[in-house]
Length: 312
Image 1 (tube, rainbow, N blue to C red):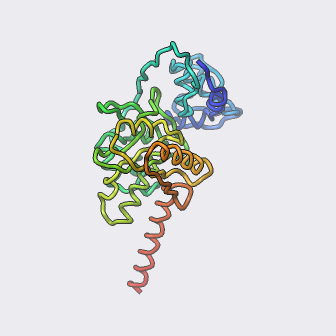
Image 2 (cartoon, one colour; image 1 turned 90 degrees about the horizontal axis):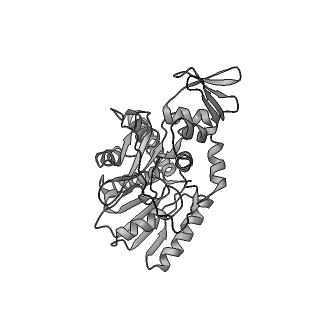
Image 3 (cartoon, rainbow, N blue to C red; image 1 turned 135 degrees about the vertical axis):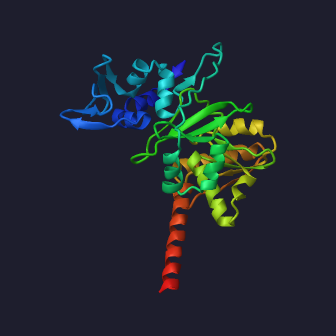
């Protein structure tokens, strides 16, 4: 088994304080040359925000990987994937059989208050889109206040899940342990010949919300299938197409940045050669959530101007 050292190094250098805050909901106060956990006073992180020691457990180490392996007994490879959302294994011996992954889903919160505040408030996503995905079990809030996006196999079993933080700058994101990236977060319609493809679940829901605004039809987004790649790899796309044979048109809605444009161009060429009708639909801003928030801001400003004119 070969391990990508660059991915491991990225995981090792993940900010431990931020990881604890987002994954577990812990709060830290800086005292002297370390950060002390308010919920667990014996847990301290050094000023480098990488070295930790949990005095009551007698366990310490360097970085998030050490914590997950030593405290949560997580296999090393799973720990790397849990932190980065990227598989660190680049090759396996042919004689070694592929072991099925066991997805570990976080527990649901009793009430998804942070989920709605984050997705509908901060991200401007249409509440009808959110409601539908919650009802289908593809979206929920965990007990730490993170939003959980779930992908299923053909038998309705959850096989992939990613987390998105809702507090602070909301930069926390990671795949759940045991996630299989082939089963991306999606809206699959058995009669849809067109598939829209995105880098993230947020962009999928944002583009769906834009369709509602553009048409005035709350069900406009339900007419075509939509798939999140959880990045720019086409792993989930090729797997989806093998299951959804009816699809013959691909619309690549990746980010409007160098990585997104390059990936969209490469996949367009590749899948055109396979016989699919393809096109690229770039957002105006960096991504479709930026377009959606700008659109909603402009609509609010327009309503304010109209109200001022009518009420003067």
